[in-house]
Length: 437
Image (cartoon, rainbow, N blue to C red; front, side, top):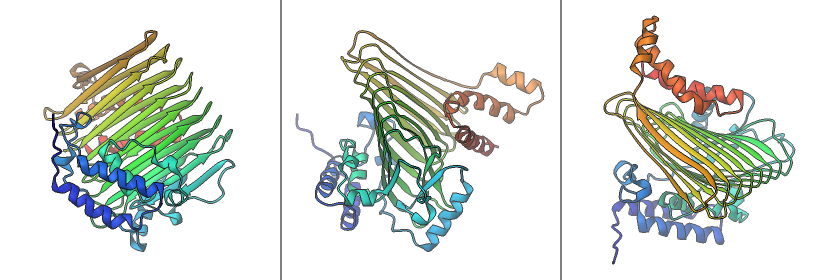
């Protein structure tokens, strides 16, 4: 069968973007070759659409339509707006690394007096040095290919063997509120053997920011005996597009715990591939989508069990109001050598209106014969009896609903180990509930 790839003008828009960015983009040699190859992959496919199985529920060709021009380097006014936004979303006791319009803002970042064993560089410096670890993401995904072609800055965080960081690291992505533009960022987090760290990613908008696009990617490696706690908070403007991807590799006796909360953005998608490469590793992934209006949020997770004696848990909760649309796609792959794998996945969605939608697609693919695996999905509305119970005790309807919603998403949020970060996630959920009126 001959297959003709249907190209649209979107690829031409992205082509003009590539031509304008690549001349000043960091990296040469292998990095430059990878950019060209990745962009060729993107041009061949274009923006993903519903005929691509992994993008069945998130048709960017219909919703995004164009790749916006890359954001210019932030000027003094943009940095001032970003600084005001950082203060509004400040977290006490963290080391803050701020990316403004896709560029590392050293004046807003805490880069002095690093803890022993901690190294932080900009992505630009790492690419100029030829660090090919940043090129490991699979570019068969068209949006990851686009990120590889146009990545301009980000942070490279390395924790030495045996180092246990006492202060969480917060990577803050800020749209400064200038003209509509796209940000192409990529970060590397390398946790050494027997070390420990907490990383928080926050996506926020300065006052006045409307339409913009975030194209982000992360490469994460967790060494033998190490632990990484990872929190993602997506609170973009209500007109923004946030397309992010991550590739995670977990070593022997390592522990990876990630929790994601999405309350902002018009369209967001987070796709993560976790490869458990060392025996006796433990992985926990939890996520919450809180959506209303016409928001659309897609969480796509792939868990690869490549070795025996490992445990993984996936729990996902979604609350959709108005015409909100939540998507969860989870797949657990158990390879033949991965005997005595213990893997479970559960997704639940709560619909608060007749026009809300939730699409859940859990999958298992098992080639080993000595495993304990399971998956499930459930979608429903608020329990009328519980609502009646709370209202009979004097609570207004909205307050009663808020209590039940908080209880529904609380199990995922409780997976955040750090008390301050857990409080931050709870505050984000409470802001969303308060906005319902």
